[in-house]
Amino acid sequence: MTHEDSWRQTHFGRLLGHAMRRFDERVLHLMADDEAVPLALSHLAARDKVGAAHIHITRHLALEGSRLTDLAEAAGMTKQAMGDLVNQCEAWGLVVRQPDPHDKRARMIQFTPTGLAWLAAFKSAVAQTEEEFRAAVGEEVATVVALGLEAYGQA
Image 1 (cartoon, rainbow, N blue to C red):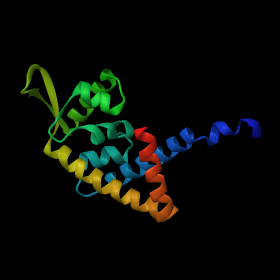
Image 2 (cartoon, one colour; image 1 turned 135 degrees about the vertical axis):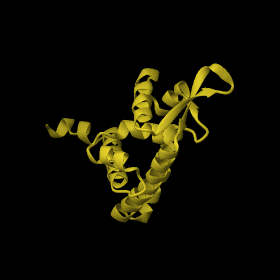
Image 3 (spheres, rainbow, N blue to C red; image 1 turned 90 degrees about the vertical axis):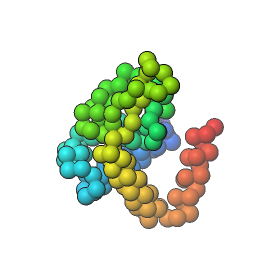
């Protein structure tokens, strides 16, 4: 790659993508080692069977439950792709589909008790990973990065 086209490797989008992958990988690693995570899920995470895509459900599923279409939209995924993730998470015991009390044709996806334990482990892993980021780049830089990303993401 020449100096003239090196921008393809160093533009913000690429750097953000690398940072997000590193962050998610660290979170999943911590969750694999978390004693609060059910053993079967811990083993899946440790063997890289749980990936960043599964984090979308953890990030976006409302505590009171969500419809598949709302969950897919929040995660920026197709309904079909989110349906596949929900099926996998349902098989692992993280979520369950229940009838929507407001619309008998629709189903709500909700965390199971196992899923809530997974969510708690996710919260702890995110907090630790954020602390590690702050330690690596310094408090001032971390604050500026957070403010910048928040402002850019809301624009």
